[in-house]
Length: 263
Image (cartoon, rainbow, N blue to C red; front, side, top):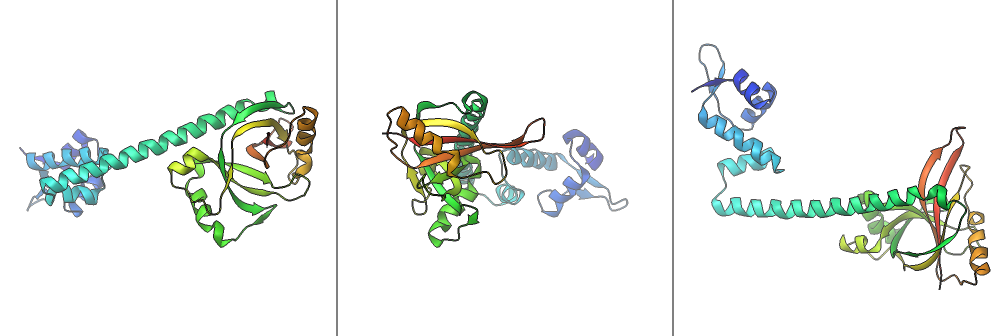
């Protein structure tokens, strides 16, 4: 039986241009009427079209599909399917990591109002930090190039972070923090990144409410609070930028979760 383009478009819910594209790629070869120039599709072309849609749903490109339909041996076809399975598994794992990061970020956001200005001691995870700016200036350091490239590729798995090597100095670094377990799994470079060991830490939320209102004065109270509690700082102070927002009065706010590791 023969079917027109109109029949096929209606049955498969696809556009005429799509059928023409398949034809131009050499995947479909409809019969072209000599008198009217109409394209007619027989049962064999319909079978091919079914296969095209099936393989597209698996994530194969049209170039790959053409090879699968016209060139692949059984062994090549099996190898191609095995590779696609591996690729989809890796993609699934990556999306799982993204979901875990998003859930953690959501949890941090929900605690802003509750923890703003209040202090708590909790266990924090080990993180990897990649510096991209010193105070406000971008860092163009060859040692950071590979780590910076990693951060740019995996933004979805990081959170903006500020790091203070010395709370007594007006020097800090902006960059990106990754959970160390995630960073290691993805093969992130150790050169150009700093490891902040997890463990007990004093944690609070602070509000840098003005555009340029950022510096160690936002965090000085944390050191004082730690000493009041009889605690000893054990590592560099850092802060995760949680959000940049405006309130009903259109006042600007940057909410930061500050972390001071303790012995």
